[in-house]
Image 1 (spheres, rainbow, N blue to C red):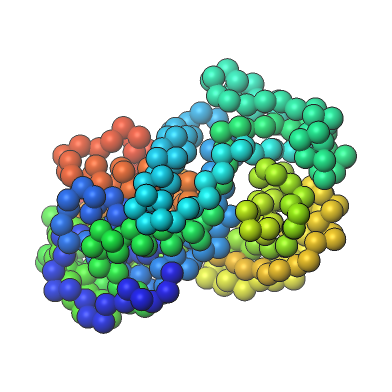
Image 2: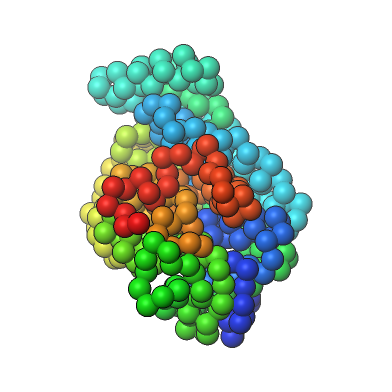
Length: 391
């Protein structure tokens, strides 16, 4: 999304200020406007959706990536369930097809240990009544003939899939603009102004001070991804959000060499409708460094070639890196600040920001419109789960 929506001066007042213009912040702002919250402002330090949202692969994989049926799985599974309606609403409202693909994900095993892990995952998911199939090598190759014959087995998750995340960002930005959200791009948040000289248990939000002016407000949603710790105040002692770099490769595959998203323990392949084939992704603690490295290229290429030797013949197109927001326990931080009235966190989505966007928006809207209650799905994700959060 470009800078067409830049507002030179910040509005003087707002009913809600969303810090962060990625898919999480955009989804929340859109949802709040739809709920009649009033004037909603997004403040984004760069361009809309040009951080983790732009760099992602767009996988919707709650089953492929789940180790157990815990609270996080229930959150992710519910978000996948509502994605079709989310996509349809966006297309009807903006005319943008986010390319929701529900053809399923194949999770491959190449070693005996990996076969055992797939058996464990199959057992609990089948027992839970989830859609999952166990495939032999022959069955895999019938579905995807370009996969390496060294594959020893796979699980097929027919309800997992993907979206084109850059089209999703564009659609969300267009929807926000259409609904009347004020979009401040290339704008720094300098501080959240609270009542009193210091943040205390009784503090309340008074304003957001930005590089384009001061916005009076009593409600701030921190959806700043890997930069969210800048707005945690004293809470940062308990849940610093850490950037985790993910490098990606892109090849041109026309005609396509795979039909499904293909997942393995070392790499994944994501075919796009326009002939691109994405290969991801590294997991690196490199601070805020978004450079692509030789080591990252080597690691991803090796993982991709293990899945299919045919990738070696594809033309290389581009490479990039993004920063995932990682909380200390690896789970999202979604909920009201226990210290400052009027601050809600929506960050720490790590590898699942695209998947969790619709459910995060819905739950934050419920926190805003029903301030005395907490949705059941959010139990376990509030910032007050960290023992050292000051109250």
